[in-house]
Image 1 (cartoon, rainbow, N blue to C red):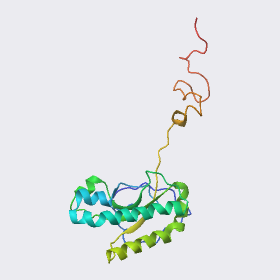
Image 2: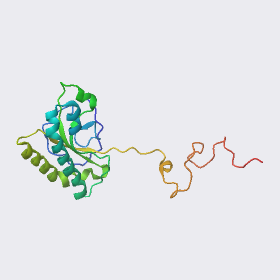
Image 3: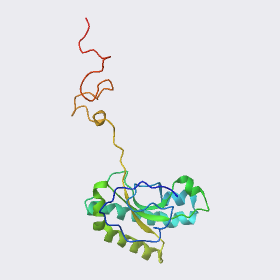
Image 4: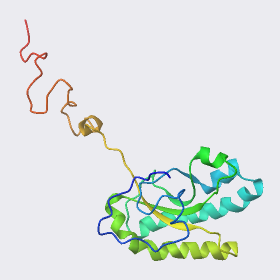
Amino acid sequence: MPRWRLYPTAGLAIPKKDSYDRSQLIAPHFAYTPELVPVDLAYDYYGTQHQSVIWKPITRDIDRQARGLYRKHDLQFSSSSKAGLYIAGDNEDLQDQARDRMMLLVIELAGSDCRRWQDIDEDVRAIIKRLERHCGRDPGVCVRYYVHHTLTARNERRLANPVRHPEPPLSPLLDPYGHDHPSVRKDRRL
C-alpha cells in the first residue's frame, strides 16, 4: 500500500465519502498532491484515438471551470497548481494496461486555504453534475482536494532580488551566531 504524505488536518472537516475512499491507488483528501497525469495527455499517449477525441474537449472545459473557482473564491493559485481532470498515477502506472485508470476531479489548495474547501464544494459538485449530463451517464469521477506542496529554500536570502536586498547571501563560513569562522580573517593583510 502506498504511503501518502498527509497535510495536518486536526479540526478540519472531511468531505463526504465516495467510491474511491477504499482504493489503495488514490490518495485521500488533504494529502500532498500525488503523481497525476492530465486526462487529455493520458488518453493521447496511453489510450485509443477514440478516447482522445472524446475526452480532450471535455477535459479542457472542466479544467477551465475548475481554475475559475480559484478566482471566484479568491483562493491562492499558481501556474503549477493542479485543477481539473486527472488520472491517478504516473506515466509508469499508465503504461500498465491491467491497472485501473481512475479519473479524479482534482482541486489543489494551498495549505492556508485547506479550511475553505467547504466554500467551493458546492461549485465543484456542480462541475461533476455538468460532466454527468455531458456524458449522459455517471463517468465515475470523484473529487479530491489535495494540498499544494511547495519547496522552500534553506537560505531564502540567496533567492531574493539583490536590488531590493543588497546584503550578500549568507556565507557557509559564517556561523549562525554572527562570528566569523576561524579560517576567515577580519582584517586585511598588507
